[in-house]
Amino acid sequence: MINLTENAVNAVKSAIAAKGVPSRGLRIMVEAGGCSGFKYTMGLAEAAEPDDSIVERDGIKVFVDNASREHLAGTTIDFAVTLEGSGFTFDNPNANSHCSCGKSFS
Image (cartoon, rainbow, N blue to C red):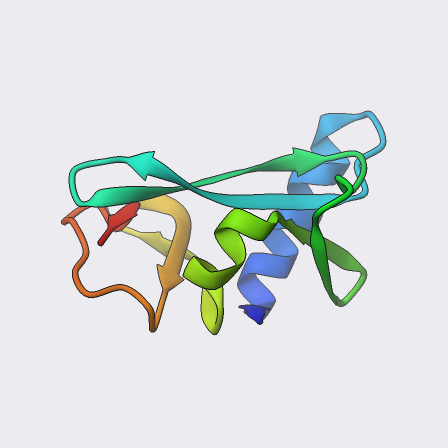
């Protein structure tokens, strides 16, 4: 379903450690919006919701709700550090187009 690179796993583990309160994993959702039609949203989560699918990699649980699942199938999430900054990137085979920021797709 969703793949996390080693860099993404390390970034999530660092975020969980820095938060200082228990987090069980990472919630990833697709919402209407952004400049291309849909946008990715992410955040640390303490528990799964009843309709979540759960993917686990190297001790990191990724929670994905039913509505987002079809949009994210086969997506690889990476964490990149570039001259312009750092952040998560999405390689989504379901996207027909992407905006220049990489956080929005159609």
